[in-house]
Length: 326
Image (tube, rainbow, N blue to C red; front, side, top):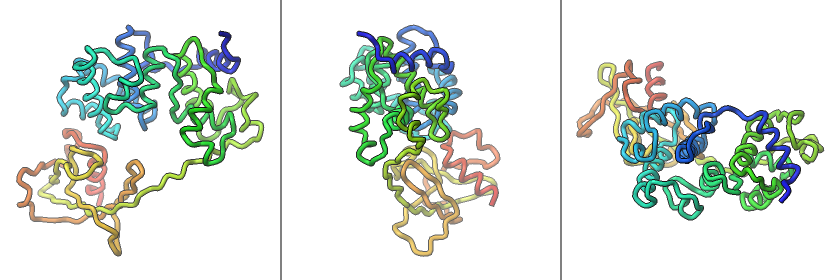
């Protein structure tokens, strides 16, 4: 079947302009599957430029699925430290273990089996099938969504619903090079159809782009409610050391090391010291210095001057740095 003109133009542009990314290296089929799995987990909610050094370190220390399935949690978290959303790396290890146990050590090449694995949803399954297995799927990530919304001028709330975008993506057609084509569409959104100031003069499909014709590149955002939450964070300090605990209480930063905290329900006259955005949660944090540490059976003390020696989430490190300044 003859490829659509739009498909050919996008692929031609990609061949000339694609970035050299470590997970795109020309490697064996098995390595490509592993590289795709790791990179897709890392790229969930994280930009390419941030992921590159993490990916390189990760595959150097954990080169395959078998090694990933057996790696100690402490080492795993250390390699992920700074990327955030730590549930991703815990799910990545669980996925490796399931692949070793249930799929003879081979990454599944069908949608149903892929979405049965921890941390893999519709998008990641589509991305793996297209990129790693060269199957005719177009994963709908933020970059491709943006190209689609602008190309078809989708502005109304109902137009930008996920179900509608999935239907509309057929406008891009299919290619005899599915792996390259999925990455080409992502690359087009990342490098050309950027969130602000899109480079329309370099776009291979700009002639038929409805947003360019209307000179309107604004994107309608889905109404996403940010939830305000309030926390009292307790600081226990001895000399230059702070007391931390393992978080078994909150869903965010689960099982990681944080300061003792408690959530407050609609407090009055809340005078916050710190504010963090975590997913759709707006965290308002008030700091309270406390002296009595007897209730902690196994406190974990860290030296504020030796932060890099500890395996800590960025959230905790930022609080320590704030306390050192104030």
